[in-house]
Amino acid sequence: MKIVVTGGAGFIGANFLNHFVPKHPEHTFINVDKLTYAANLGSLAEVAKADNYRLEVVDIVDFAAVDRVFTEHQPELVIHFAAESHVDRSISGPRAFIQSNIEGTFNLLEAARKHWSDGAGLFHHVSTDEVYGSLGDTGMFTESTRYDPSSPYSASKAASDHLVRAYARTFKLRTRITNCSNNYGPLQFPEKLIPLMVLNAVEGKPLPVYGEGLNVRDWLYVVDHCEAIWKVIHEGEDGETYNIGGNNEVRNIDVVKEICAIVAELSGKPKGELEGLITYVKDRPGHDLRYAIDATKIRTELGWEPTETFATGLRKTIAWYLDNPAWIEQVRTGEYRKWIEKNYDNRG
Ligand code: NAD
Ligand code: TDX
Image 1 (cartoon, helix red, strand yellow):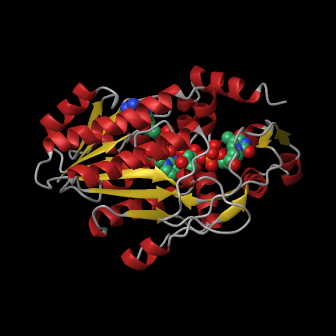
Image 2 (spheres, rainbow, N blue to C red):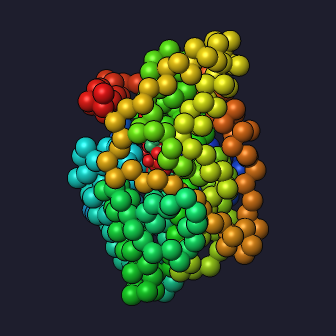
């Protein structure tokens, strides 16, 4: 089968390709990626040598380019990861989110509608739990929770989910959607909480915690997410939505303290010294308090179970960052440094 994987040079897409390309020589994986700041071809060094891998440097906002990919490769499956993904960037500059996440998804759906007649082809849309908005101290998101996005990022993802459902209902396009909680693991761009804190701790830089650090995220190891997507594609049902989450709710401040403890252990630095770097900074506007996924549907209907706990996955992740200084140097371009100045300099 020919599989288009959009956003395959980003964090989750690269983990997906690294995991599945070697396992499935019978499939050809076509990575369709614009190569934004968040992409890194260094993450795909091994996969790039494989006979069943191709790279198409394409902006999904460009319909003609997307159409050409469908014409040339005739994919039977699209797994749509490509998106602008960082909430803070969607606050300082929302336009790219509207373009890539909404218009980009629309273009893929239009190409799928044009090229896939009579139920040929499956469109798998990778989405987030942030579309459901914020929880209070109790409750969990199920597949029927009302959409209530808070940030331009989550609003753009919500819009893209709605478009996917509309194409399923109106044009009978075969689609599936997964809404997943916060991912962490190797290859994540160090603007996100976990890699940012790991790298800053290693370098003795401040650890900027937004607000009081009491916001809760439900963490899932990235390969567990990838396996869940694979399961939905192979065993799920058309038109259905599946929530994915690992039942790992942790307050941000506790995540940061845990990172300090593991970095201390692995690097030999005193834990107290690292915790002393914790700095409370101005909160994110519209900051969702708590996310928690009820993954009963994918667990009971498809038998999916995560393999990592937060403790095992976090240790593995930190060890990976400590062992891969070359990868870190590669992503820390001038653009990265500019973002760090822009996001943190005015937080006080
Ligand atoms: P990422 O920012 O690390 O990577 C995104 C990739 O998409 C990059 O390679 C980038 O170049 C590409 N891209 C962006 N705009 C594009 C465009 N216009 N055309 C072509 N390619 C483009 O993101 P990620 O964390 O890997 O997230 C992947 C997907 O999973 C996103 O759709 C995101 O909403 C979703 N998701 C992420 C998380 C998480 O915790 N990271 C959780 C749930 C869902
Ligand atoms: O420096 C920081 N300090 C801090 O306290 C950063 C970068 C984040 N935070 C807080 C904000 C959040 O409560 O940590 C939490 C996690 O922040 P992010 O890593 O930015 O993730 P989040 O906003 O929760 O969104 C992530 O999960 C859902 C991904 O970026 C999304 O793409 C995904 O859909």
